[in-house]
Amino acid sequence: MSYFRAENLSLHFGGLKAVDAVSFAVEKGEILSIIGPNGAGKSSIFNLISRIYRPTAGRIFFEDQDITEQPPYDIARLGIARTFQNIELFENATVLSNLLVGRHRHSTTQLWQELLFLPSVRANEKVHRRRVEQVIEFLDLEPYRDKLISGLPYGVRKVIELARALCSEPKLILLDEPSSGLNVEETDDMSFWIRDMKSELGVTVLMVEHDMSLVNRVSDRVIALNYGRVLAMGSPAEVQQHPDVVAAYLGA
Image (cartoon, rainbow, N blue to C red; front, side):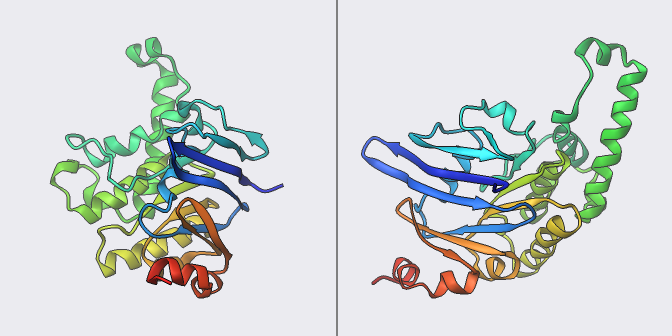
């Protein structure tokens, strides 16, 4: 069975079919990219997986478990993390504090234990700090560790959002337009980190992206959507040469 799969996934807003009977699978250790014009339904699929939206029809499976009805707060506990197209960070907190938020799903202590700062809490804190420092090193964020988010440039914030997702130690990470707003050099760095997430951290990646140079560099397979439906699926080259994909982007 596939590591992750969506079966006939649909999302309707009245008469608008944002996602229309979409089926696909992601294999463990794969980087799968979803492309398509604006309004194709790409981010809506992420919102369905994250349980921000409830599907009109279809099922979602992760590690052979049906997660279609799982509440949103359980998705991270299952090992699924995501980043957002619009950066969602705590502006008046430090980088370190933001990254520690990503460790929430691994917390095993009770509130009363934390208030008393018992030895078990201190031991957990050391584990969380150690993992966060590993992510900081992985993404070259050492110069920003103790700085407030509000004073950092956009490109650095984009990396911090990725770092926070990685701090949860995900099995599957959903990257929603990771290169959006980045310059060429920052996009190059992002491509290296995405590949390293797969090769060094063993994370499976599902990515929505408009930058086709990034898609070509990192993707094992690509799915093209338009008007909520799958147009083509295959290697980056196969999908980009598909006549329906060309027509969707350039006009028939």
